[in-house]
Length: 212
Image (cartoon, rainbow, N blue to C red; front, side):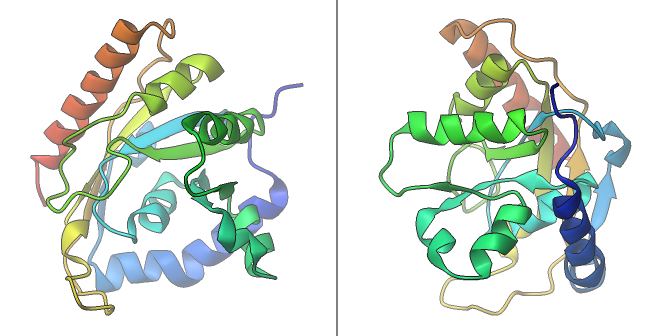
């Protein structure tokens, strides 16, 4: 039977961290605003895609989904006692540095099969202005293979949280806008994946342009 939700233990940890740490920091320190929360499917596997400008993006994004979002993490983190169990419960899945894209894709597909919402940043790396400049087709391909919808999300303001040379987050305003879910790509043909990916970029940029 196909799983439609994350494991119970993961949901408990997610809510514990959300309400004790992430949400208070987002809403007070960053004066966070969230729009479109009702667009998030509360059950069933889901590919969440967004722009990326800060190391704070994964917990902020997951917090705003009202359900855990699994992100890939470097394999070394899974060698640390206690941390390994914690990040695994939170949905992180290991990918070795320098590993092939196929390994990362297998890990993401396994996460979706287990009923998780799985997060991917379209650029694959942080951008200094929060825009998507070189979108990869991986998210669309994963959604096509898993036959799951894609949820586009815009993170506005996170590029200013940490300035170069500083480790202390700045209390900058952050806004999260969640778009409507996009049906799974109809095939894994490149032209289909490119069209879906470009559509995601346009939606995210449109949400991002709304600003604060």
